[in-house]
Image 1: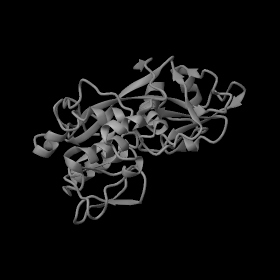
Image 2: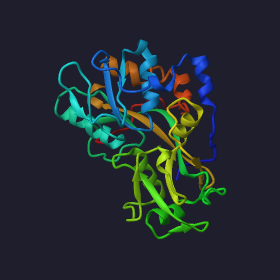
Image 3: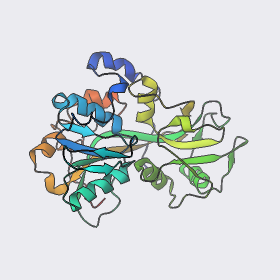
Length: 307
C-alpha cells in the first residue's frame, strides 16, 4: 500500500488567493452556457473538478478548458451544436463518457478528470496523464467517540467495509462509500483489499462531509479536497468532519487528465496536458491553491489503457 505520513491537514490555502488573483469559490462551476463554449471540454472526477475549473479560468484567459462539475443539472451541453450528454458523476463515469464520445465520433468531449489510475488494459485507446498528487484518508465526525486519535490499518478498514468489524470505541459503525463511478471509491477499496463491500455500507456523494450525520459514520476523504474546503478555496462542505489516519498516515495517489491516445499529437491536447512544460503543468500556483501537490511526472504520457 502506498502510504505517506505527510498529512497536510488544515492548510490555509484560502489566504493564497490574494497573491494568485484567484476568484472566490462561487466562480468555480460549469462554464456559462450558451456563451462560454471553450476549446476543450471535460467531465468526471468530483475530487479534481475544482482544480480543473480553476485551471480553466486561469489558462488562456478562460478560453481553453471547459470543465463540467460532477453534480448539478442532469445534463450538460459541451458544444454550440448538439452534444447534450448526461452529466457524469465521478472518474469512471467521466472516462466512460469520454470513451462513448470517441467511439461514437461525436467529439463532444476531449478529456476526462480521474482520481484513479486505469483499470482495464485491453487496449491503449486512452492515455492517463498525471498532473498532481492527492492523498486519501478516512473521515469521521468531530463530535464522535471515533474521533480519538483515529488511526486504522488497511486490515481493520477491510473488516469495516466487509461488515465483520461493526463497532469501535463503543460506537456502532455505519461505513459509507462514495457514489458508484467514483474514482475515490474504487481507489480506496483497492487499497484496503475489498472487492465487494458488505451490505452494511451506505453511499454518499464523495468528499461531502455534511453527509456524515451520525456518530458511527466513517468514509474515505480526499485530503486535498478537505484542505481546499476548510481553507476557503472551494465551497465548504466538510461539515463537522475531521480526518483520521490509515496505517499512521495517508494514502498517496496521482490524479489524471485522461485523453484519447489518438489525439495526443493534436496541438490543443499536447499544449494543454502533455509534458512538464504544458499549460496545466506550469500552473503550479493554481494546483497548490486547490490543495494538491505538484508532481515530477506531470504531463507524462506512458500510462495507456481502455478505461
